[in-house]
Image 1: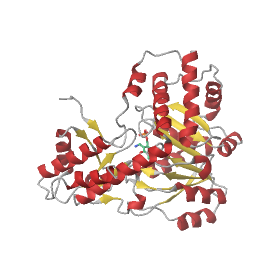
Image 2: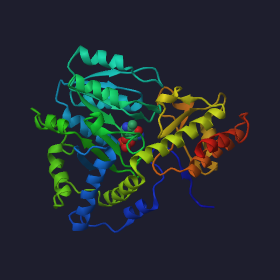
Image 3: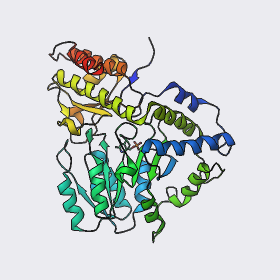
Image 4: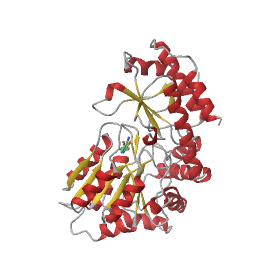
Length: 388
Ligand code: PMP
């Protein structure tokens, strides 16, 4: 008995022991020479992971929603037009955030499990002047993956800032922030970045920082105002002590360790590993006769998979069996479909064994729910892909 279950939800995830050790170390002063080095190094490592040598990184105490909030409140002024490209729950959330700061919000959306076409986006961008648009790279509620590159290109064409919600994608799905010309890319620590919940991480382009610096109105949130935090990030990066609000010393120490893991794996290798595990997992589910959300493989996320329960199987009972198999999976999130599907996270330091153990637990639970299939076919299908 290990006494613990394998956490395979789409964040928080399983963390590396060294990361947890850094989190549990005695807390240092936030202005000690050692911690200044850790903070400064973490900011620099972020540029490598985001592939944004020219970006301005921010490391904030808070969850992913703070990152969403911070990008919005610093760039939006009352009556700005904002375009939300929504593929699920988190697109809707972004619309609410932008409305709160006085933006005129237009939401483009489609049927559940699909993406908004580039034509529709261009039509909307050409209809009026938009200050910014937002893209959810992977909407964790639908598992839909959006290709941000052509949308960022369109945004540039219409002189609109682009914000990428990368909470469920940074360090798991390919992102080349500078090359693709995305103005803000943010995430939260508990996802593919591989650190327990509590940090909001943003990378902001020079162009977006200039838009912020030329604001005519005050930022409508004291804590989230870049004015307060830009000098702090610059000071730490220049290895100088500074203070505005006490940083999360232990979480940032853990972040440095995790970013070092990511960089030493190699960001391209990491994307490939995520892709291979996601493909193996998805194909295993299909071999079991299960239906996936989204239906199309080319817009399926590599960081998580959403799976419909088979007909006549109660989700609660199924997930209870999964728990009895020492695995934790997540239920549905999209309000309209919540009880119809479950979600499996496979990001960060996830390995082949975690993947196979999860597929095996799904098979056992399906058997317990009297679902008919060829026992072992899921594991066999995944093994073939993982060994290829
Ligand atoms: N955006 C996306 C795509 C997410 O998956 C999440 C969290 N699941 C958030 C934003 C919000 O992050 P948090 O829960 O850390 O506030």
